[in-house]
Structures are given as structure tokens and as C-alpha cells.
Length: 389
Image (cartoon, rainbow, N blue to C red; front, side, top):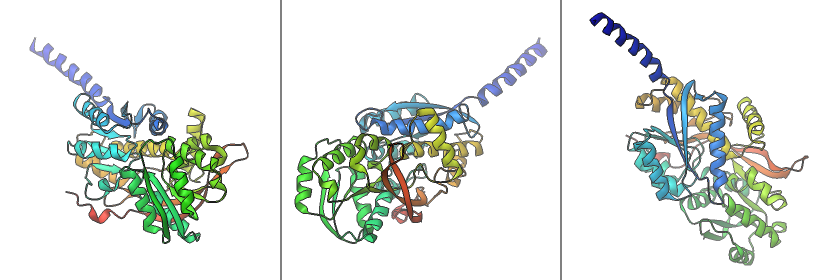
């Protein structure tokens, strides 16, 4: 009887082993899927999911399960989702937050719980500097980056009196701060609007009266659509050129704005026309799956998944081996759609940053064309403020 029992126990152990090995790694995605900014989260989710689908439900050969929930652009709701993912679902890796105020509310608490957070978008200065943490990585950018490149470009182009506009929340201040860091001319005005605002008549009237020679604005999602349309309706797009970061000129936003955005130059770390194997493959696959050109948000979601895949492969899917998992993420051993990519000491990207121009292509689509790289191997100014344990 003892021998039979022993054999049965051995069979049970053999059967249990593979089942445990095949248990998928849960990845929690907290993102914005509702409100007028909901398409931003859709793009991040769709890019991330594409990477999983291309490996038949795996990342780096490791089975994964993506849990997605909508934060509604509300910090408190995002905190509740994070807590549920961690406590109920046992999630050890989080990603997906779009807005910086939401990231600031969520990230510091979750990383102190030995949870890895990989940002596929928001990159507030606080989390790059004094609020950095060994469990926090950003695969997209530091907020200031895409404005710094425009500040340099606008200065080199000879503009000397620029009007600034952004929403009044952490990312808005970071973005205007980044532009001013590299822009050497005068500031005709600096205005902070309500987050989610739709009517810009008062701001446009004040802007017109200031008589700047250019406008730089950061208004992502629906905010950018409304501003650009109203700016064109006021006739100002014919006399005062507009500049901004890529967030206000993504491929889906342009289909809503149309001619009002043609000719606008914007800064980005990625564009669909970057000529490298990983990007060509990604853009073609995304178009085939979704029937549209991916935005930079989709590219960031895709790269976040590929980064995590490279790390999961190195640790054999063992997310409890936290030191090894962090080391594997830092290596960034994956083929990025940007062509080259690495992490700075504060675990934010070191990458090339480009100027793009909004055009209407031969098929009548509104899109971006890469003009040139203005920065090579660009990091961020907050590295020295970051003191990790």
C-alpha cells in the first residue's frame, strides 16, 4: 500500500510541475479607455496586445495574461484598480497609465509593494527625479523630452517670441518647462488651461492680442482636436505657425483635425516611417490587425510588451525573482521600434528624438513625416536628482 501511495504521489508531482510552469504571468494594465482621451489608452492596449498575439499568448516565450481596466482619467479610480490587481489578482507587473497626475497617484505606492511598474506613456519629472524608484521604469520618454527637441528646433528656425499653452496638471508644466529649457527667445504668454477643456475661445483671443510669431502647445487627445479646429476657424493658422510635441499630432487626432494641422512641426521619439526592421514589421502588423496607422501610444505599448518579454525570458517567467527581473529590464535586450534604446541611471529612455511635419499623403490621409533627428542619445535633466537604494 505504501508503495502504491508513493507512486501516486510521484505521478501527482509530475503532473503538477508542468501545470505550475505554464501558469501565465499576470500583467495589470491601468489605462484611460473612456472620456474624450479614451483612444490614447486604446492605442497603448492595442500595441501591447499585438506583441502578445504575435507570440500566441506569450512574451519572451512565457505565457502571460493581460488584465485591463479603465481609470476614467481619475487618480482615485486608478488607485483602486491597482490595489485590486495586486491584492486580488496577485499581479507583480503593472503598466498602461496615460496621464501624469494619475501616475503620480498610483506609482509610488505600488512600487513600494515590490511591484514592477513599466510606464508606456506618462513620464512626470517627479518620478524621474526625487521620486524615482528601483521598481519604476519608463519605456516611453520623460515628459520634457518631446518639448525640449521642439524648443531647440524653434530656436534654430529663428522664432523669437512664442506663446505657450498647456493644461494645468503635472505633465502640462513639465512640457512647457521642457520647451523653455532649449528655447532661447522671448515668451509672449504662458497660459495653463483646465484639464479636459473643450472651448478655447478666450485663450485664442488672448493669444491673438499678444501677437506672437509662433505658438507652442501641449494639449493631448480631444483637447488638441478642439484647440486646433478653433485655432484654424479663427484664421490664425494662416499667420502664426503652431508647434508642439507629438501628443497633439498623433495619427488618430489628425484624422479629426484634417487640414487645420497640415504643416505643423512636432517632436517625437517615434514615427511610423522610421526605417528599421522592428518598426517596419510593427507598423505593417498593426495596420493589418486594426486597419489604421499606429500612433506613438501604440508604439510605446508595443515596446513596453517587448521589453517585458525580454526580461521574462531571462528570468524564466519567475516574477518573484525581483532583483533578477529588474536587472533583466535594465538591459533592455529587445529590438525596439525606435531603432535603438537604452535606460539612463533613473530608468528613463536614452534615445534619438525627431522633428516631424504633418502632411496629407498621396492617398489623402493625414499623417506625420519625419524630417530629421535633432537629438541623438538624449536622456533627461532629472538623472542627478534620482537617488535609488
